[in-house]
Length: 260
Ligand SMILES: Nc1ncnc2c1ncn2[C@@H]1O[C@H](COP(=O)(O)OP(=O)(O)O)[C@@H](O)[C@H]1O
Ligand SMILES: [Mg+2]
Image (cartoon, rainbow, N blue to C red):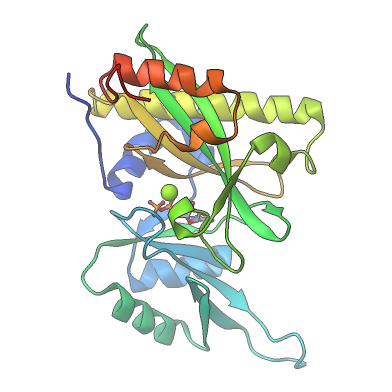
């Protein structure tokens, strides 16, 4: 069967939400409109606004509640961030208008913002690669940490982010025992997401999961990619890691046997 993929983040979210064991890992996600924007800002104080069909972090913005702490009793405002720029809005109506102007007719989503852990004051998240094995089971075959560029709200490599081993990123936050536990949980979440998606998309062979870890060390699924990049797993790991990834990808037809 040909490899099948889905672009819409909304569709993928709806499918994986159907698995109860995954629900605690999926941040509240709604279609962009005024009411959800207002309600989610009240409820979470931090949201992401992103294109339903985006890639590479393009068009991804965040909004957080913000107060000028140097001025006593100053009012709360909304801080919109995109790229390395930011803009303040005193009212949610004005924020919504500015967002509508940027978004135009493109379908957008709003998602609860996750306060991801940081490395040298930069946010990081984790890309997990999950592949169909030649034995037709799902296996999480690799993890890579992605660190945002300075002042940026996205960690994407194409957005100036850099890659690091998750062992190095999580070491300051976890004991070896806790790391092992988190590692096992992320692996299992990845495999369950793939199995759940495959119920609706039988030709699925591989996914890339964007995972954020918050201060409580909770695992959050930010996004599921159905055309994951493989090259980041060549960079920092022992070469056995990519060898297996490549072997699986050849078995399901993403790569040619002769490819490197
Ligand atoms: N809900 C969120 N909370 C925190 N960070 C987020 C959230 N959604 C997206 N991000 C950041 O933005 C990046 C890009 O968003 P993502 O949903 O993965 O879109 P894309 O398809 O463009 O990669 C993520 O890797 C992460 O760094
Ligand atoms: Mg992504």
